[in-house]
Image 1 (cartoon, rainbow, N blue to C red):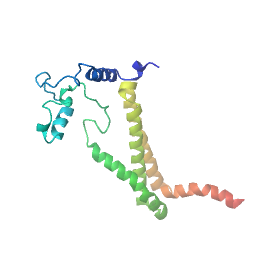
Image 2 (image 1 turned 90 degrees about the vertical axis):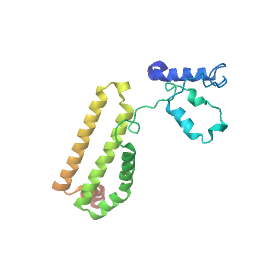
Image 3 (image 1 turned 135 degrees about the horizontal axis):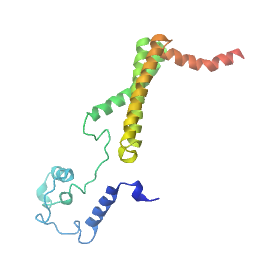
Image 4 (image 1 turned 45 degrees about the vertical axis):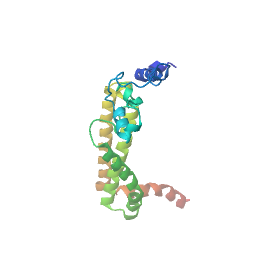
Length: 196
């Protein structure tokens, strides 16, 4: 398999840059001379300066301050690292929704209440939507499949989520209800056993 086609070309550049640091005569082997290297503005260099509390005991220039912003590790754009939105709060809400299933499903099955059915339908659709959104973000990256396919996938996801919620609400308001349908589905095999 040709790794040049599979891996991003920037990965190979980063590896070559790190190899030059370790070679004899590289940045890691040279003596530290602050005038030799320009001051870096990378986040790793700033992190290095802020973490060291007693900087007088350490050399004036550190390994991290020698690295340029280009040679620092770059991350793939994800929901957690995107430029807009409060994704920490969204992550917490996703965990709360997932944990709410532990009490919501048994409550809905015991009470068979229309309000609880609506709440269960909304939580199930949100959980499904966020899970499929993560799958699309992982497997339909624009750098791999082009810019059109991710847009179509997100459009289809929104349509499927809206149609699913609408169908569940119709089932709740015009039908027997969500939990009643689940119980009727479980009773199908029991009816056949009682008849024999």
